[in-house]
Amino acid sequence: CSRYLPRNLRASFPQLHKLEPESGHWIEEIQTIKGADLQELLQEFQRIRRIVRLEEFLPGLDNKAFLERRNDYGAEFEGYLDEIEGILRMAAKEGGELKIL
Image 1 (cartoon, helix red, strand yellow):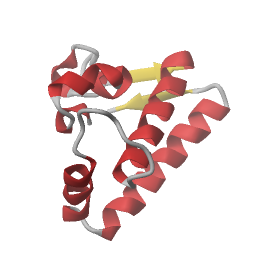
Image 2 (cartoon, one colour):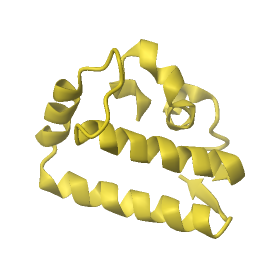
Image 3 (cartoon, one colour):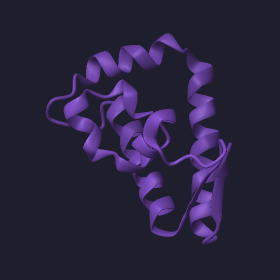
């Protein structure tokens, strides 16, 4: 989540930051995301993926270090990201909501 971003860039990803345990957006260990917030979370997630792939650059962020951190997790990690993005896309497309436990 946003904890891996430099502090000065976290405000650029408010929905990702809300997923942090200390964000104050959890109610009894559950977070519900819907509507515009869900759309924004999907966009932020896709943007992070573009940054990691070096397809987009964000001033103040060391993309290469970000990429190296991702590579530490291996190819399997990319599959997890694909699954997460698919879930976000489906929920956003259908106008639903996403409950995160």
